Image (cartoon, rainbow, N blue to C red):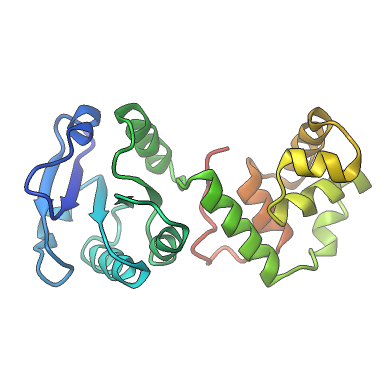
Length: 216
């Protein structure tokens, strides 16, 4: 049975957490250096409820990761912000979402991460892809040679963070056609979603913090 542990400074868990996982355990912690993380060693998933800026989130995630290196971490934020989410992922978290996420969605998050995926919101995902594109604006030719000219145009646009609607407008095609080209690109490049496509197009190595699978 999966063992979920919620790490929080709150004296009581947010009710939605227990609605999602009735058997979850609560670990109270006021700070990374003031919390006993020994209970996390046999956890299946750690839900880390944190407040503070990006450096504070990085410190929390880094400390938890050091205490339980094989246990995935989902950061829960009262007010999700891109900078905070980027810091959490860069520090080793497998997911980032609102502390008030609905129980059904929390269970979905857990399922994705337990299968090796990464959970982020669409806005943060887009920022990640834009950041990757900025690192390497010239896509690797050998990879893109597998695609048709139109598939290549769509793939590069996706890697730069464009939406299907934006791509359709620029290329003068329908969103349905964009989706068809994306599906073909996914199959030819052996990827399952937009984030993996962006990683391949931008030539990001597997060792980067963002090389994990992300749900489509």
